Image (cartoon, rainbow, N blue to C red; front, top):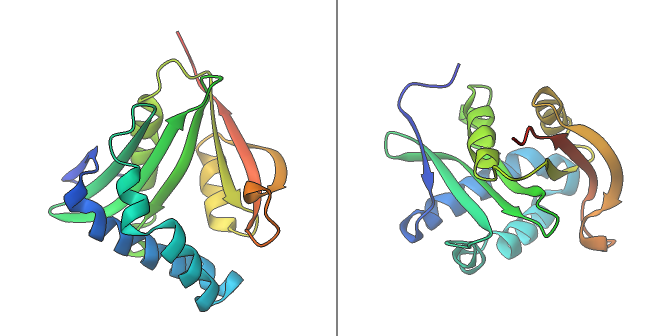
Length: 168
C-alpha cells in the first residue's frame, strides 16, 4: 500500500541536491557490497553530478520525476522514448528507509504512463542486484538478455529486461 500523502511530480532545478543525495545514499546501500565504497563513489560522482542531473531536466523525449512525502524527496525515476517508441526506464531509486512501501511501484506506473504510445518498456539492471530484479519481475518485466552496460568492460554487468505495455 502506497503511503498517504505521496506526491509525484516533475523534477525541478531546486530538487537536484536532494535527488543527488538520494542517489548517492541508495547507490551506496545497494552497491557497496558489490563494487566497494570507492568505486560506487566514483560512479555516483560521474553519473549523478548536479551538472549531469541538470542536463536531464525538461527533455522533450523523456521524464524526470520525483516522489515526495511531505517536503522530503524519497524517490526518483527517469525514462525516455526511444526511436522505436519503446519507453526506456533509465532510473528508478527509492531511499532505503522507504523501500517496500509501494512508492517504487507507483512511481514506475506513473513514469510508464507518460509514454502512452509505447508498445514496450525496457530497462537495464545490475545482474547481481537481486532485490531490483525481483521487484521488476513482480512488475511484469522479463529477462531479454545479459550485456555490459554501455559496452564498457569497467561498467556493471547488466540484465536487459522488458515489459509489454497495452497500447490502444
